[in-house]
Length: 254
Image (cartoon, rainbow, N blue to C red; front, side, top):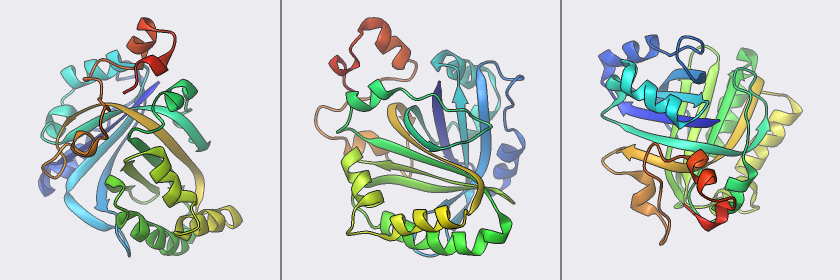
């Protein structure tokens, strides 16, 4: 399976159209899960709503299914002026029943030093909304100030769905933020969630980005800050194609 994230500034009037056109598994060939959401800027304090920016997160059987969706469905036309990235899940914590996640550990070893994407998904317990926002605010403020953060957005579909998407320069940089002692806010939020869960269900996906197109805030986040030697596949050239060429993914680092 693969995951796609689409972010676009569609204008306030068109956000409602995006929210109303969420594709459905069964009706969209190769689609496993999808959610259209509002977005907000991740910062210290409550997320700052971006009223004209919408998002689509989805999981697919393969790149061919995503390519077919992009070519045939009307929703991608609304999002075409933004940025999209294809992700290969390599590690998951928790569970998300609408989208059982299949990970590819080979992809993690193939690109430990390249950009890494993190997707969090949560079904919020409304009675825990205030503690969640308080804990999330402290952690998000530290993330937003981290120079290794390439791009980020808060995701929400009221009243219950909340999530985040973040893109980091490397696994090591992301790990320093998430688990390092110098910035304990994220660890504190995780510990508070374990003691009294904020969500009915939650998942944390670490992914390898392997294809992106378009721009976000005037730039392509991955190639703008990519480390020397790190090159993304073009869309449609996904992990399945890589494995057909070679049995050792480390020979084709992206």
